[in-house]
Length: 372
Image (cartoon, rainbow, N blue to C red; front, side):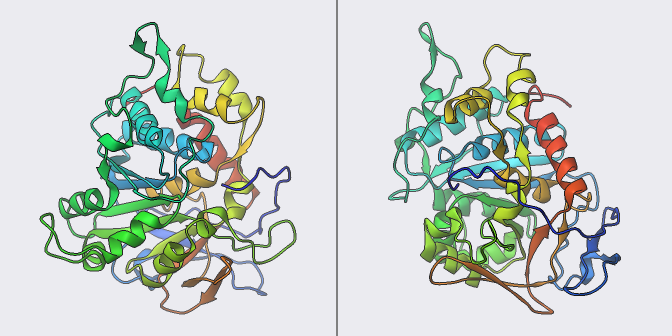
């Protein structure tokens, strides 16, 4: 994520109705009087995949993250585990686009803390950010001769390669069932698109994605001016620009984009880290938060917004842009073109929705493991 901002960007205010489990509130067209139109998800022009949850079945999720570069990745992982403990999702795998061995070790430590140390982890090779970062060393913490946060992966060399793991995970799930949440660079998913048939599936990558993936929820780009300036070049996009351009142009399923402006206006309160995690002597995510920056500080929740939309769609946390296509320009700026049958949308939120989302983040990220 980019260098911290100290302002809170005003969000576009729109009227939103509370949608039912299979409906979504449609934002007004630019220049029109704000109004509310509630339409069935099947009529969104996104093919026959419904992105709105229509029942209690847990959402099958793969998290693709650059964990270690910013603290919101760690919070997003904790958020996913809390949602799984509530029966709302299943974390099938975590793939990592940060190329440092401790990224896998830290992820494994967090998974183990939540009682899910068997979640498969895949890592990038030759990635864009090989530095250790500010908090991954939490995975190495010892209390005497014992690991503070027990885990099996001593380093990235012990983890699987990300693309074969993605193929294996997708091949083992029912058609149209998987939601991928990408909260880092597009390196792994662009590689997945180009992957050939293998022992996991006879399908090449693009066809495997088209068959197995229901939705891609991406934290990336910017769809409002940032600091008064349009054309903001967002970190997840520009760090691996060729991969981001490929993903935007070629990914074959619906994509929901959470732009920089969304998480920027939803800061996670540092006061929660200081008070809500006291139920345990050591919490890996709270400890990582303290390592990332001098306390107290509030950090935008970019990555958590993509998790929230992926697992709890249709709950009124966000509204959507009209359908269209996100274009990633040669300089890394993102541009949205409205097309009637486009497979892309980006998130929109007003202040009430932002407050509701932050409340969910605070309550669930600090929730003890194993709540049913």
